Length: 318
Ligand SMILES: [Cu+2]
Image 1 (cartoon, helix red, strand yellow):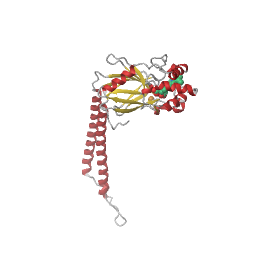
Image 2 (cartoon, rainbow, N blue to C red):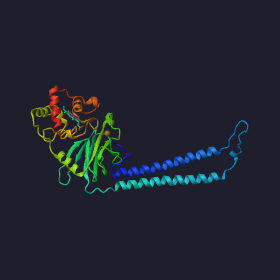
Image 3 (cartoon, helix red, strand yellow):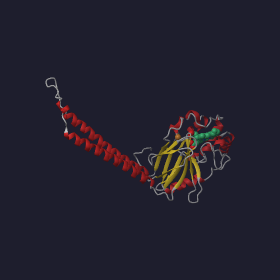
Image 4 (cartoon, rainbow, N blue to C red):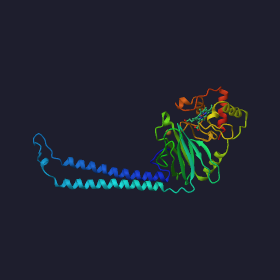
C-alpha cells in the first residue's frame, strides 16, 4: 500500500492531521467565496430590452462595501496565520519523536536501487540487504540517508513525509510504524531514466517476528546441499556476478550491486520492479536492460542448464 491518506505511524498521522485542517479551511473559504459571488450576482441590477440598464449605481458610493473588504481581509489574514501556526506546530511535533532505543538503519540511494544497512542492535551485528526494510511495530526507526551518485528522495507516505538524499550531505529521517503492514516507498526526486522503477518495501512486523527476520538476515548464506545447487553457485562465481554482488558466506564480495545473501527472502527484485519468482529472476539475469534500460547490470547469456542451476541456487538464498 502506498498512500499518504492512510497513516500507519505517528509521524504520518501528524502530517495527515495538518492536511485535514488545511483541506477544511480551504473548503470553507472556497464555499464562502462562491457564496459571495452568487449573492453579488443576484443583487446586481438587471436590464432587458424594455428597461434600459440603470448605471447610476456605478457612480454611487457604497458605504457597506468598505466594511466587507476590511472584514474579509482580516479573516483571510487570520486563517493564513492560523495555517502557518499549525504548520510550525506540526513540524515541531515531528521533530519530537523520542528516539532512544531506536533501530538504526543506513539507506543509500543508487541509480536505481536502495542499499539498506542495519547497524548493530543491542550487541547483535548489523547486516546489509537491498530494496526492503523490516521494522518492528511500535519501535522508533532512525534512517540515515545517503546518495551514491545523484539526488534521490526517500518517501514512504504511510509512515512519513519526504526527505532528500543528497550526495555528500548527511540527513536522517525518524519514524515509527504503529500498525503492522507492508508499505511501499518510492524515490520522489527525478534521478535519471529509471526513476519510476526505484521503489522499495517497508514491512512493519510485530516485534518477535521482526527479531526472527533480523536473526535470519544476520546469517551467512547456507552452503549448497546438492549437486545442482552447487553447480549454480559455481556458475555465479564463474560469471561476472561476484564482481558486483556480495553473497555472505561465499567468495562473492562485490559492492556495485545489491547484497544477494538472502535474495530469496525478498518480495521483489530490481527495486520493486518485478515480483521475486523464478521466471522474473531468469528474465532479469538474462536481460536486465530490457526490463530496466540503463541499469548498470549487464546481460548474461547462459546455457539453459547453467541458468537453471543458477536459479536453483539463488532460490536457496532465503
Ligand atoms: Cu532515485
